[in-house]
Amino acid sequence: MKVIFKTSYDNDIDLHEDWWDRGKMIALVAVMAVLPFFLGEYYMAEITNTLIWSLAGMGLMLLVGHTGQASLGHAAFLAIGAYTDAALMNVGVPWLVAFPLAGIAAGVFGAIVAIPAVRMSGIYLAIATLALFVIVEEAIIIAEPITGGVGGLFAPSITIAGIDFDRYASLNNFYWLCLAVVVLVTWLYANLMRSPTGRSFLAVRDSEVSARALGINITRTRSLAFGLSCAMTGLAGALMGHFITFFNYELFSVFISINLLLVVTIGGLGFIQGAFFGAILITAVPQLIAILRDGAMSTLGLDLSMPGLDTLVFSVILIGFIIYEPTGLYGRWLKIRFWLELFPLARRDMFRRQKTYLKTERMK
Amino acid sequence: MSLLEVKDLAVHFGGVKAVDGVSFSVEEGEVFSIIGPNGAGKSTIFNLISRFYKPTRGTIKFDGRDITHMSAHEIAPIGIARTFQNIELFDHSTVLDNLLMGRHTHRNTNWLQDMWFLPKVRREEREHRRVVEEVIEFLELEAYREKLIAGLPYGVRKVVEIGRALAMGPKMILLDEPASGLSVEESQEVAYWVEDMRRDMGLTVLMVEHDMSLVNQVSDRVLAVAQGQPLAMGTPAEVQSDPQVKAAYLGTEVYE
Ligand SMILES: Nc1ncnc2c1ncn2[C@@H]1O[C@H](COP(=O)(O)OP(=O)(O)O)[C@@H](O)[C@H]1O
Ligand SMILES: [Mg+2]
Image 1 (cartoon, chains in turn cyan, green):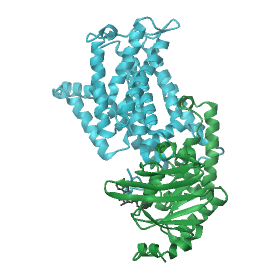
Image 2: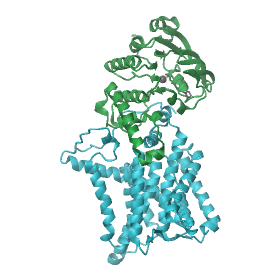
Image 3: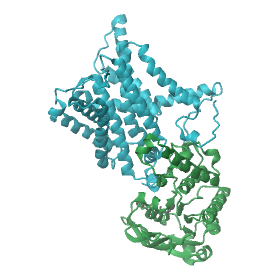
Image 4: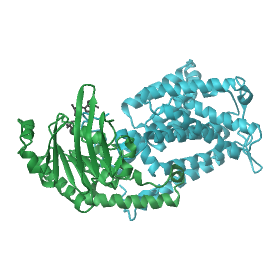
């Protein structure tokens, strides 16, 4: 097991405890950066898609995992990001301006609708966000001059300083662009979580009563979290628009919202890493099912192309996780890593949760 | 002028008169205890001062300022910290992070600065940490610094909660039954801490407590309440010899 000798408060303030941890993160980004030199177009497109889902997942993670609020309406913020970005670019605004504006538009909209919504919690909030989603969907159809209505909208290809980032013509460039955005947003998110702002999110999540006694304004904190969450998801939406290139309101269905919830729950609530684990799963499983389905067809002559199979498999996975691994894929990974570090000293039952005390007569 | 002035405070929940006409004032640097049988309304008085409950009647003044109608989150910045009878910690965070959360009212950066982790944010984090380390040293929590609350024994959690309140750097601290559920040795430690809070930190302490030996040892004055109403107020000895107080406690084991 690794023992860290801390020599200054900065050891705890820094994102990584030591150069070994930092090195691993740098190595991971480096490997991601050189992937296009080794992988073909199919895989690069899949990985780009996974990156975009990770970004959207981080948005929801901030809300669900770190502030303890639910949202069934996050597809709406993906849509706002995608339409803002594409519509601005269609009137000649460069991507470097349109993209941040897409995030800001989704964020500001999210923060404003959050003010009445944050007084709700649990299932009520989930239903309110679902209602919001329906409203946004209708608004997109009605606002035809901007959004193309039912017909849809074309996201122009991105050019920065003469370099082409088209999703088809120069997929690798587009991949690198997405990677850069994801790395930047992850860094900002991680910074937030090691600062007073992040601590106030956790405080609101774990004990509202205490948070208020510590001087934390619950409404403002939740609404800030909502806004930041929607901004991240909005940025993901903008990239998704470019990735799909031609889209209409149907791209942002309620199933996208549910898949995003799966990303954060299966990935591991309360961990930024969880968004990535979840995104990998959610984007890889349909591909795996397709491959298995083709395999079953060609070798066994079995036709598994029934509708709803993906959804069924997802549901089973989700239920399995909720029952057997509430800390998600990332939690499972932490346990495996800990077990490896301790090998062969690990004991059974080491991770069994203990009820150390019961909260009785908790005050409302 | 007293630091805290409570006048004719009352709160009724439907027919239940949880607090009914309580008045008292706490001087700066004083240790003031509220005693009374279970359900007397002691915690409710704390919740009224914290502004979790809206009083039906009466006023609360702190530091010369009427706080009766302030919001709950505006109470911490004016210098009132508190603990809870049933421990309200952030279970999924470490002891260190719980204490750092106590520094919320002292933050001078906003979310935008935090997000980019500007040098100012780092400077402030170091300062928060320095204060928190003082608290850790004072309460001897060194061994638990990196531990998650969820795995800690009850007694340690009680201490962490006191620590979080101290990290707020308040003028007055409200302790709701700080020694309940603790061993004799642990409550003795609480007594020393309360004395140090007053002497070394210049804090004013308002405490609800059942352990009469702790109350006698540290309190300057005591207020006894029963069924939401004040029974007697004075030095610990005066209050304990009051016939009404004796009657209210008859049959209970609080007197030893
Ligand atoms: N939020 C509430 N709603 C209804 N009744 C309450 C509420 N809070 C406290 N009470 C009642 O007020 C009385 C005093 O409670 P409390 O202040 O907790 O007593 P204690 O002196 O033991 O701390 C009890 O009868 C309790 O049931
Ligand atoms: Mg009580």
